[in-house]
Amino acid sequence: CSRDWSSDVCSSDLSSQLPSLIPGVRANPGFVLGVLLAIGLSVLLARTTFGYQVRTLGDGPEASSYAGHSVKRTIIVAMVLSGAIAGVAITIPILSQYYIMSSTISPAPGWGYIGIAVALLAGLRPIPGR
Image (cartoon, rainbow, N blue to C red; front, top):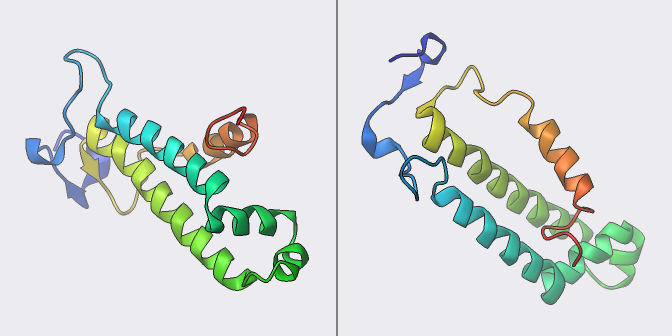
């Protein structure tokens, strides 16, 4: 491996790399996946019963409970969904740019804080302005 900090697990095998959509440009299928996820989350939150439950819970647990929703279930499902999306979000750049996985050192320190800032700038919505 070319990077000394990735001694746990290292892969430079082409099968572990995402291809580039346009040769010479760092755009990869992760960009398309990100756009599709943003559209899907927007639809999920705006047009489904689960989205209504999440929005109601955002107004407060009392409001969600008053509306007849299970507060604990909604929180757990929302957190599991958020964790899955976060896992995909960090895996895409690793497989398309770094080509390695390490259990001890993150190749993306501080990305979580950047994600919080971006979410706040977007008005806590997957697609700003909607």
